[in-house]
Length: 109
Image (cartoon, rainbow, N blue to C red; front, side, top):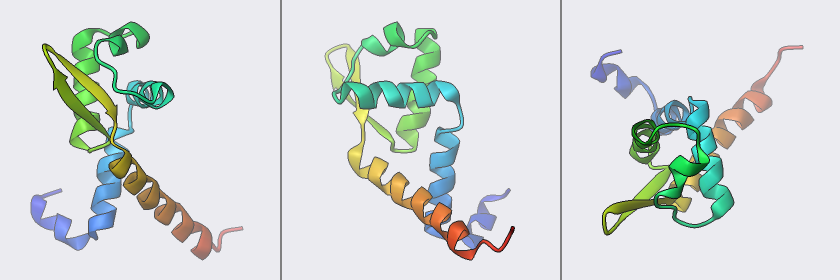
């Protein structure tokens, strides 16, 4: 889809699609669950907890960060990652609205 077609969709629809893309891999879900479970910024521990190479974990973190779901702060030579609470709550609202819209208008048996 060309960039000009994005104007056909609401900002919320576009944001929900960005979140969905970021959540579309089980490794990213596992990373988010780890960050949420720890409830703190994690530096080098992610690779020890997720059975993937450092470069693969880094790529998944980049996708999550690009969507805004995680944030990373530089701590010396390491980057410490944690859940971006504001964006996480926004994603919850986006998906909640989407799911509620269907529930409210569903006419299928």
